Image (cartoon, rainbow, N blue to C red; front, side):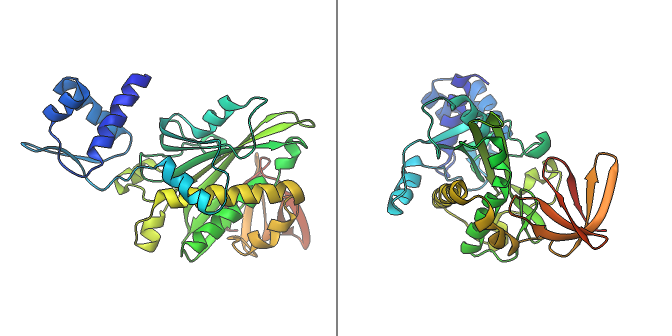
Length: 329
């Protein structure tokens, strides 16, 4: 989609975000385009995941409240916590926040650089699965972190960050938060957040970690048929509305803190914290390795991030990227 078109769509969203009706004629005057063009922009807005009412004689109105992310508010919350507010970006519509970070990698990039987006048109999870990313509903953040010890240093990174997200949700009042090895955060058996870490650079030299995190805050229910797994969101779990700017600031601050700790001490300090949320602890699991399927009992993780599975009385280790994990015998 061309930048000018995206800019027009964002203008329409910003106007309608006041919660009032606006006629196609009035929108056309503001944007200096025809009513036919406005009709197409409304379709584009709906394609981004926003439900729009159209009432004859009144015009267009959002079906539910849309409060936009505000970088000044995010920065304000961070400043209250004495957190660095440099190198934080906000995009309204983007292909992928991870791709934004990838394109920004240079000799000058600093660890902790982050980008948020209101919507992703090409959001993705592990193994290339689509991450449904409607506008103004959830949090989509990607962050850069330099790995001086090479790609191997990232082995347990998703587990450390999964722990941080689970702890954040607990602090917000969510009970029954669980983590599922290697990168899912679950509430009441349904996925509420996920992590995608992509690596660039050298196996033994400097590597670059691009860390993508998605948290469902208030997913539009009418998009449910586009999601291929059980899911939930923060608003449904707690029956409340949330300030996404505040949660964005908390997420960024806590992730940066965790990454500094991980950089200094590896995964070991996170293992006990992770195990408090372990969804599969002492439960039967199936390990899928190509055409092979192994059965055992999950027994947590080790300091490298490997999944420990007891089989025939012995502990075996399995690493993410090598296997797929299923719950149940």
